[in-house]
Image 1 (cartoon, helix red, strand yellow):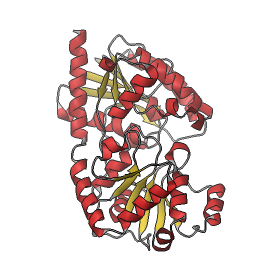
Image 2: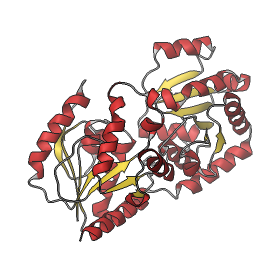
Image 3: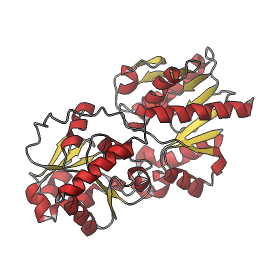
Image 4: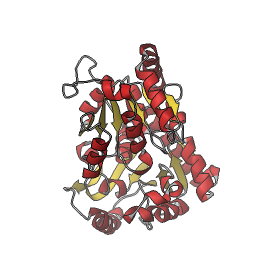
Length: 368
């Protein structure tokens, strides 16, 4: 069995959960079952994970550059058509959404990650405005869909009226290595709450900032460490100053090693998002022994289970009370940490690979 993964996500993301997912799959399937061959067809790509992996790939890594989102898809589509003539895949697995696809006669699988653009259209602008249309076209031409949570499946059925028989739920896993618990994070001098990811729109960071700044106890005893999402903007810095938390809110850029250490030493990981198709940072926190407070919406209760305390992400006071109650209770911290270790065991890349192989075999069996 030969599985071909297309170029799309690898020419869009330098790093990111979606590209990591496909690198994990493409690297594990040949080991999982020797008759399975995987190829990533990405003539020009910018992805760090793919570049550092041993995955069989056709293409070369290039530096990222402005305008790549417009230029690379065109180049890769043209080049892939020529290269595809020398390939004999049994399945084409599309990695993201496009209006047109490679011309093949084999089954097409598409992974769908969330329905955030359909649920919150006002949050997007520029090229993101077209993702809803591109996604609908990609879904329509796919023979089968993989979704990463039951919540995403339900949203897909609700918003695009996709038949449930066309959808298979296969959850993701964490790729972080467990940290050295005895190694301190030297750059963090005070106890801290940890926030990971982008800070705009549905990520709801502003509500977390309000809850933090309006708590005398949190502001006095903790820093708020933000990882990823780019440096703070001038508007953000002004907002911190206006709330008198300019010295307590800090930004860090972190590789996987530092991120794992930050999780492991945090007093609490807070995930205030309004919507997540999966919520990979939840698994990262669990894996690293970090207690969790997160929103009670979308996929987050499904993923976190009993390993988190939940709040209404639109209720600042409830968010604040939940955060305060955890960090003031050593027993609650201990319990959430233990539950997180146990919960995370239900999510692994081996399970993801096994379920994906099973689906591939089922799809080919239906075509036979």
